[in-house]
Length: 254
Image 1 (spheres, rainbow, N blue to C red):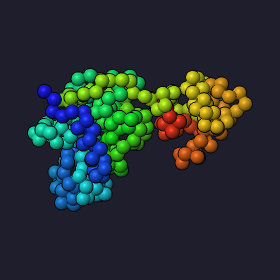
Image 2 (cartoon, rainbow, N blue to C red; image 1 turned 180 degrees about the horizontal axis):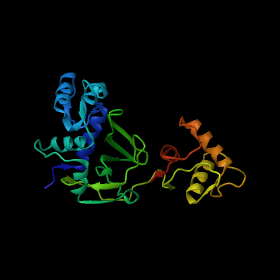
Image 3 (cartoon, rainbow, N blue to C red; image 1 turned 90 degrees about the vertical axis):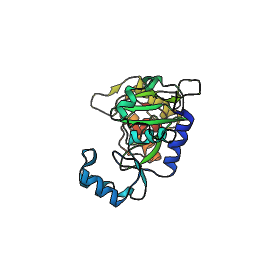
Image 4 (cartoon, one colour; image 1 turned 60 degrees about the horizontal axis):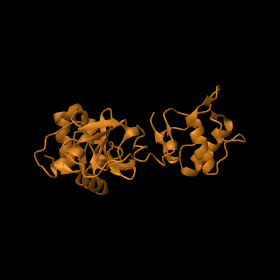
């Protein structure tokens, strides 16, 4: 019997994000304070140092705090108070079904996972996760996670009632994916991923040279990428990585 519906999971993490919940490793819904930080530091909680709890995490004093799995466990506990603690790895291991991100069903309430970390897909190409001390609970595009590390798998979580019929999630604008850093090198990089990036730039009126989308990452394509990055407020380095791929509407799989 399910503990919570997928819609309720989504509503819970959206509320946590709206209320600006923070991130402290091993946090599970406590209101963080100097007193609690001192207690956890003295305990050496979760193997973390006193400096971690007293200094690094003090930005979250006065906020409810969770870690990545703690966010989802608190959602379960909103319906069943004694729901057991689980790590991100255990949530993955106990998932009813899972698969590669490129084959993810478009079902809000699915988990998204990479080694040591988990978030919740909320629909419309967005994920909410307890991302880290720097960000707290935050929302970001599925294909451009907070911190830049790509999700690897989707998870049909145990004890969740998924009411919606699955359909494959749209990846950005459905156009392309990039799985390596594209950059100008002495031996120019070639491939369909380069061609896809060039086509996206051309569609946005950025020149990649007179030959157009030829699949070759040369100086003109690099210039087009740099102009696009500058207009989007990205780091202007001429390299197509996770953030530039996402800004172009693609999926980063590297």
